[in-house]
Image (tube, rainbow, N blue to C red; front, side):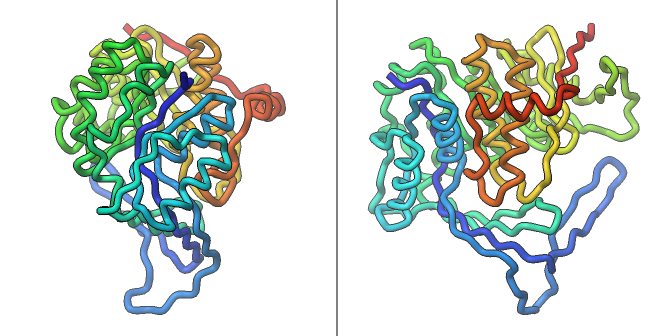
Amino acid sequence: MFDVITIGSATLDAFIETDVATIVSVCTTYNKKDFMAYPYGAKIDIDKFDFQTGGGGINTATNFATLGLNTSTIVKTGNEIQGENIINTLNKFGVDVSNVIKSDKYQTGFSIILTSFQGDRTVLAHRGANAQLEIDDVNFEAIKNSKWLYLAPLNGNSTKILDKIADFAEQHDVNMAINVGTSSIKQGKEFLYQVLKTAEIIILNKDEATMLTGIEVRPDTKTEKFSDKVIHPDIIKMLKEINKENTKVTIITDGKNGVYAYDGKNFYHCDEFPAEVVSTLGAGDAFSSTFVASFDKTGGDIEKSLKYASVTAASVVGNFGAQNGFLTFEQIEERMSKYPEFGVYVCSFV
């Protein structure tokens, strides 16, 4: 029996860092978007270059294993050297690889990650085998005997398996957490209905929450006091809208603004844990998997789980690579002890 099984993508990532990248901001009445720009037609020197394994299924599995959970992962790779590199990474972290599917038809997913001087990144992704996960690839017997099922973002044809997996987990009392990706959201809220209805934990970033609910966080909306903080009413609307199917916990991450959560009764806000940002890649996977592991470990303590998850995410963004900076629970507590003022703010709104 596994403590957790992850399902998601597996990629070989090429990290490229150069200070030549320019951040261009484009503003409209209701929002602002930033773009990473390079001189057109130029030959640009690279300051840093590295190959690493990644993808939501792999990043979360390796973090779960670091936190001491007996972990397996269901991912699909090509049957080539890139796929072997992923197997080697999983073995290094002690993740069970018996559920990894090797395809002779599709290549292992590949990504080029362009990192800016601010630490943010733009990802150029070739989905490859990640987009071709089929229902026959899924080991349902292993899921039935698992305590948790963690669904990382799926894309392409792989999104078609979501409903059957959600139904199976519900029927066999397997706890399910999902990090809802844009590929699924773009297919409409009805497409995600069964997943939203049955998941114990749903995690999205603010942009994904806007796509799912159609609710914009508008700068001209009047704010309300939230303990000694201020929470945006549009965030509250998002959380309520996503949570209305009686999900146990809904979480919206918001970068430097921290993270918000709602359990159907209370709203929670956790600030960003102090960090020197090197690369934001993998922060979401680190946060999500740490929250789920902490939620299980603490018997559903949302406040403590938010703090633990924020500490791990801060550690990951302080390193180059999505799987560098993982922490054990003991290391998380040690870091938190140095910031006694770091906490979670809880409030209820009618």
